[in-house]
Picture (cartoon, helix red, strand yellow):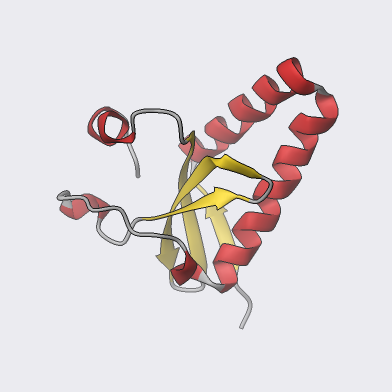
Length: 109
């Protein structure tokens, strides 16, 4: 049985925006390296979905949500949910943001 990961549309947009930002401020190689690191991190999580930490959230919609940093880009966090044969990546967000407000304002599904 193989593990897989599914990137939701908002997470895909987050990844693209972060890669473009990194390419602009640090160089194209860094933006590309970020995308490779995200793929590597998602593969790790798909085979070990329980390694991320669970935020304390009251929302029943976000039950099961986990957070894990992108390898080599520790300030960038992947919000994911374990799935039957892997994970669903819901969002990818820089950790310097106010995450409480983020959870209240942004869509995470």
